Image 1 (cartoon, rainbow, N blue to C red):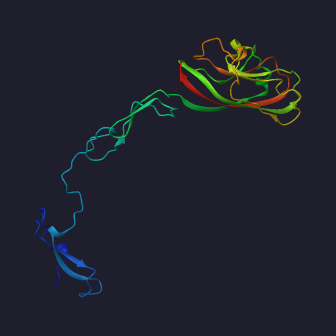
Image 2: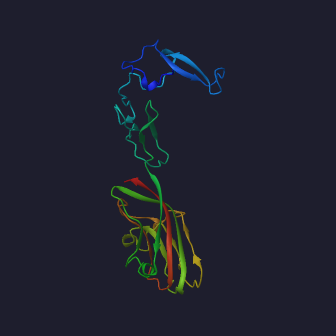
Length: 245
């Protein structure tokens, strides 16, 4: 009479290497279609893990999260280099683990943004009134514009002021004599569609292109020489970098 496995005496100790287990070899059908009964010693069983001696995993250079004893997460450790895009750095230091640990120079990060300018903003945009800030000044930094694309869109009435459009630093200081770029008679007589000047800086250095005040922590703005009076709106797209003053 066959004996059930559940009726056998339980082995409470760890099996010895020469202890024997019952196994069905499914690749051998000589004993039946389902396989042939065979025996196998414990020592011949494949290692399934879980019986090793490792109880703790420490974290070395460049890693954080250890030691892990039961479960946990190991991550890359932060270095002293801030995340960002560095433009033409002077030197780069890499440690033995391949991590950037320092960057000298080239700390400017290229940024871009767009600014929507309502008709109310347009009407009030004279340098003596409320210029529109494209980039707010940052303490200890200088805003260096790379390009400005300004799109004026006709809406309800024609501009007749013949006012000029300017871009530069701090309109209250710059007025109409110190600017980075300008467009003459902007939107004047435009009765439909858009007008879109592209500014990439002055083509030469003359008195009107100079800014005689401190550029650190200074807003970069757009303004007009006089009050605009047309029914139009605008959007400004600016690409720039921030550098240490």
